[in-house]
Amino acid sequence: MVSKASIPDDIKQQTIAIVKQFNRISMHAPRDYYALRFRGRFAYLDRCQHGRVYQACRLEYGGGMEKWGFAIYKYSRNAYDPEEFWFPGSECVDGTVEGALKAAREAYP
Image (cartoon, rainbow, N blue to C red):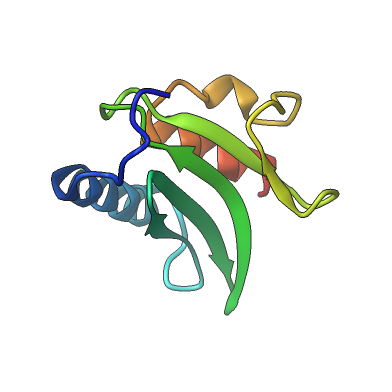
């Protein structure tokens, strides 16, 4: 990845807007939606279903809105795995937030 710094505020705002739109169009809020949290150069997408929160995936900022690194959450290892691409939805991973959301929804329906 390009940047080791924190995600710029304007990129965070764009990412928040994408997740909100995805939730509005593709999910069954308020009982089923994705929550977003930021830490350093990472954006974490958690699936919220019926009051429970499940890790889904982690995005790593790579310097632009179409340059996100992707790591699926592996419950078998209790960790994010950027090398894992053998899961339902992996074909959706394309460096975008939208692709990550689609992949996470397919991996953990």
